[in-house]
Image 1 (cartoon, rainbow, N blue to C red):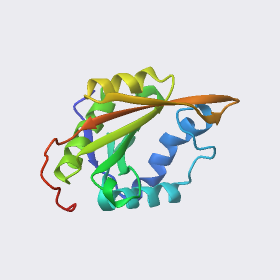
Image 2 (image 1 turned 30 degrees about the vertical axis):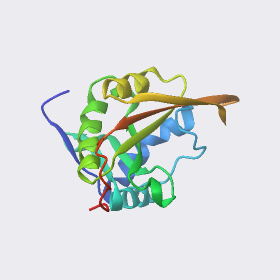
Image 3 (image 1 turned 90 degrees about the vertical axis):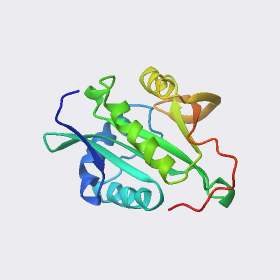
Image 4 (image 1 turned 180 degrees about the vertical axis):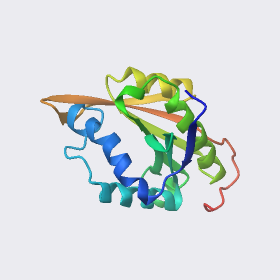
Amino acid sequence: MTTSLVIRDATEDDGAACAAIYGPYVTDTAISFELEPPSADEMADRIAAASKNHAWLVAEEAGRVFGYAYATAFAERAAYRWSCTTSVYLELGRRRTGAGRALYEPLLARLTDLGYRQAMAGMTLPNDASAGLHRALGFEPVGVYHRVGWKHGQWRDVAWVQKTLSDATDPPTEHR
């Protein structure tokens, strides 16, 4: 990583950059289970939605966004509201450079500050880079959904990992 790395809150104006980063994961890999890449406008809407109750961060160098990490609701039922799902995406040439950690650490800190207690992440298997990043950040394996997604002509497994953000046992307060 160079010293010009900036991690900041995403805005809707980052929609095009995030869509450009994510597109190859959709079209060229099984990492994303989407079949059509979202447009810049759709990505801007996702940024706005995630930023309301969770967080969406981008990494940029020399003013150019090259990665992002975000969190969304784990599930819709009210009892799950203190748990979230996290994701990180980098330009394909930026994987295994430390940028994923640089994005994920402040994301997890932000989620903890917002009162979230658990963070989950799912990853299509195999995905050694994602598995290594999540392991290094303290996520623990909780299970594998076998043959749960069909993409690029074959069934795909998804591994799930979980990280405790806070082990407080007191009743949680509503999100700030």
